[in-house]
Image (cartoon, rainbow, N blue to C red; front, side, top):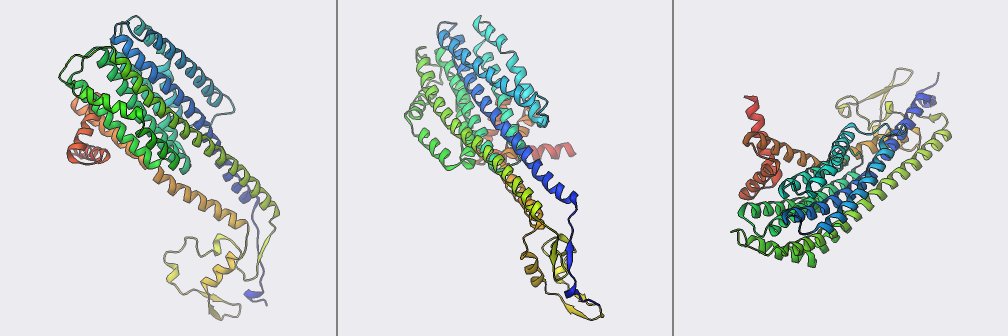
Length: 454
């Protein structure tokens, strides 16, 4: 009769087990390829947003001056917006409206649909502006809603991303673009004040709130961006364009009493603000370049790993473990199993009925001495676990953004405010209490939840 040490255990991995391992890797590749496609859409959305921001600013001056100023600049910016729109639509169709691409996330597609619906009505908005049948305020609001819809596409791309490195880049990009959008809104509102030759306290407060909003989103950007991107922003923050815009901001603050100002300064304001915003676009380009390169690298690496997995699986034969413990999860002490089994003194019984203590550390050394199919299984599981943990941290900013949105909605419903006023109310409370915006938002949501439970 053979003892346990004389038994040779043979591990047979079923064909289904091997196929599922490869299927998991193929699924990872599919997700990464879809993520890479989403990153390409992000670039087109970025270009569309930038073009609309410039068109919005020029349209405001055109409307506020009753058509006397910026007619030519507005036409140029509209042409650029149309080119960006054509590119965006073309990419969206090729990536999401073909038989070969049917795995897109429904939330992302829904946000794209909403943004496209707004773009569909751009010709109507432009015609109303051309005929001066639209006020500068209504024009600003319409363009802001459209840009907000496009930024939601980027937010959803970040929220559904399954890779922590790419998620961090998307979070940095979204917050930078949101900060840039608030800079664009500041340019638009400032253009209205200069073109109408006066400011008032409400408009000055609006501009101040937009400046604080920029600071908040650029701070989040700095938290998630790479060193090269942060260094580029530091250069921008100390640039002549940033200095000039700060000087004009001080001038506007002194005009809160409604003192008159020359309308011609609107062009100075627009040019200075545009120089700063155009410099921001260069940082956006750096961010999206890093994003697309990282996404492509991830896809290439996954394909390479897939080929390695296939080669290794083909090279594996039935494995032998002389100690009677085949390399499998059934005999791997590092795998979770019986609760607190490490506190138990396990016994091994030989064929004659005698027993001896099993040395767990010795068994572990025996298992780890083999490179096998089981290593591939454990490696894949560990990779998914690591990615999930890092992804959770990367998405913290997304969760906080949703929290602020929820708090804004509560204030809008409770006090009959528009979105901008609700956001300003949160900002003001945060400044008064010297707390972070997200802390105030959490308090608002918590109070609302308690009230609903009564």
